[in-house]
Image (tube, rainbow, N blue to C red; front, side, top):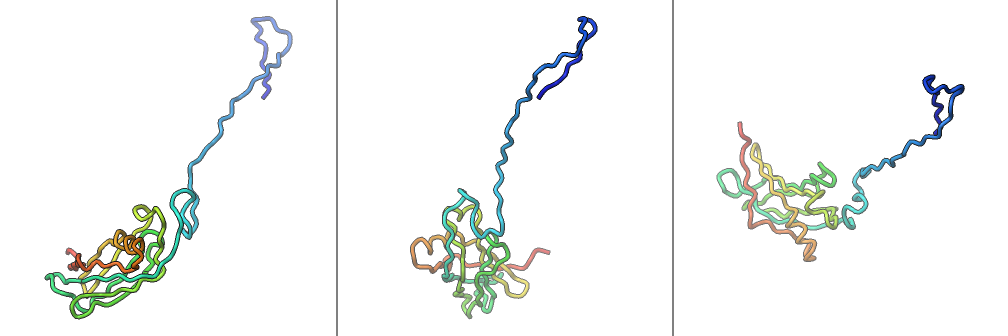
Length: 161
């Protein structure tokens, strides 16, 4: 960049002097990850994405701790594709359910970050939830494709008033 500096009368210059000046440039670096509809994880953040069909077994209890027959049970995706229901079932007379899961996203290295699977049970005004990431991941890893959470019943309660 060239700049013309005027001579100051104090020094007795007769004409303007041309001086070469440079302005340093600094590269602008941004650390942003552009995502679209989360079909694939951001580069370098996670591993391969696969989709699996599997089953989830469990038990639902009502507010009194008794089996909750006919409770509606679903698996919600609250991370990868929030709001997506991946399976639905009703509890039997003993509160047990066998929920078929379709197209569950298995994202290598992201089970504790962007994946968030939650079982939701509802019967009238009562509801309960249970986060099942670790159980689903274990069933995929061991190849059984059956996650059993019967040892930890989903206990429903009425919302606080």
